[in-house]
Length: 223
Ligand SMILES: *Cc1c(COP(=O)(O)O)cnc(C)c1O
Image (tube, rainbow, N blue to C red; front, side, top):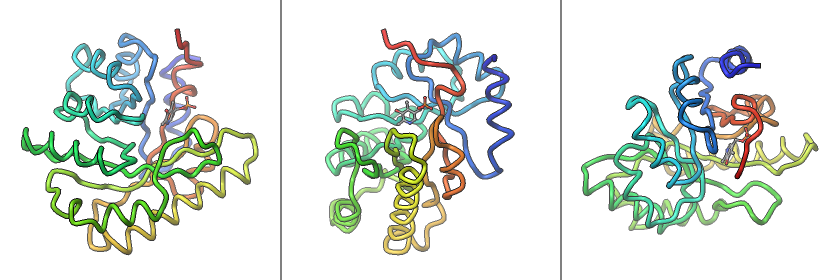
């Protein structure tokens, strides 16, 4: 099936209020342009170098979400144009984003990434670390960060029960953090969860932002 058909089919399945991030990692600019021409405006990349190579050759009004592990020395280059950094998993990173955003008088939207999977290899905060971060003096002084919600990746498994439970956990972290730190802030509203294999489950469990690559662009070629 074509990319346009894939996008159409996915759009039909997702309710209003759920945003689709087309994960374009490893996909060349020409193919991303095709998806853009079909009306897709939000794209996700997980490597700074790759994003920096693609961004200048693609339309300016693309909304780029950064979704991968981000090294602090790459922050400066992506902060001027990135729409959202979904993968904030440590204080040091948040500090650097704030610092670089302040320099250019920008406010950068971020999500806190939680570790919800059973795999140790995946990145993310636990709820205690998130609380510690959000209640720190340091965080409260950051004026160039807008924390809009949470993000997580479920375990890579066929076991629906396992995945569902992890999504339920992420939603519960969202609710707790919202009530403790962002109760009066409408902009804290995103639960980013769900990929090609689990996005329907994620939507059932309250996702507002799904990140889909393979179901749009086909299997990735990592050479
Ligand atoms: C690659 C990736 C996705 C998309 O995965 P698919 O299974 O291809 O849909 C979503 N989120 C993150 C963080 C990713 O790295």
